[in-house]
Image (cartoon, rainbow, N blue to C red; front, side, top):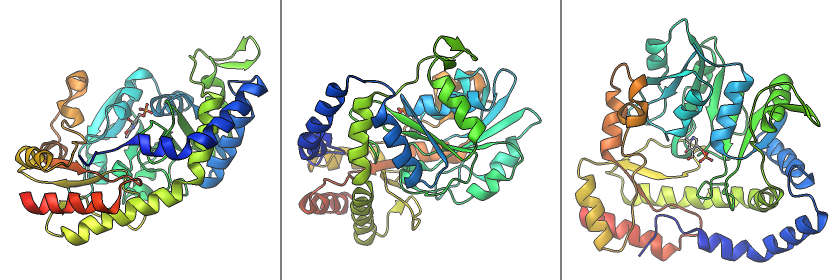
Length: 350
Ligand SMILES: Cc1ncc(COP(=O)(O)O)c(C=O)c1O
């Protein structure tokens, strides 16, 4: 079976190097917020050309702390795309604000500025855009010019954007991401020194020095082991993204008639996604032919039971995308033979 993703291949390749790094961490006696974390923060800040990087415990934490750091809270609205992973919106709820759903562009499935303008109100305190599946949003500049903070959800786009457009970027290192951890992890990047200082504090219970707390917060720390692993992975990220690109381009060349998410020179193909009205039949037949597929995501946020209290109107483009999108295997460790098998199986069922 060609898997949608197989992390054991990456773990096998890097196990030896990680064991050495792990020994170092254990011998140092510091397991949280030590030199591996600060080293990884510096490496990551350089990688994305940001002044500050603050490592946290997950992508959800990164979004949550950026919003809290910007003083977004009860009574505020935050505009989010209707097609994304649920945590983009739950972070808004976590600070007590209200998520407002904007429909997406039909070719990129990323947030549309026209829709943002349509749902904006005097209570709008921020906009979150998502570089969905690793494809940079077309309109980031426009979104940054609406007069409220623009936050980039980069959970799926490590390496796609090497310069911030918004006030901050929030990354996830969930193991399946392009830069994937051995557990959970996340990163906040920003050029704003005050915001960086505040989220650094919010990461550790709002503590400014030992046992002195300026803000009410929780624990959002990253482990030193996680940082050590991610430093190894960061060195291999460009190579992995190149391989993803070559697989995705091969699919598009071999299967040009499919309705692929529209491409971009900086797309890092976290997922290779096209839309089809025959999704369920296609997935069943591809499974029979030995190829796993996925759906990212089967519901738009406007269709999620948890988001029901916040839905004021449907988002038809996102909802149609949710009904038709299908993800085919696209990860760096796929073999050429497996890539060919994916192409053959799609050809056989279309
Ligand atoms: C677009 C998006 N935003 C936020 C998150 C949350 O990241 P994490 O799972 O690390 O909390 C994810 C990951 O699932 C995601 O895909």
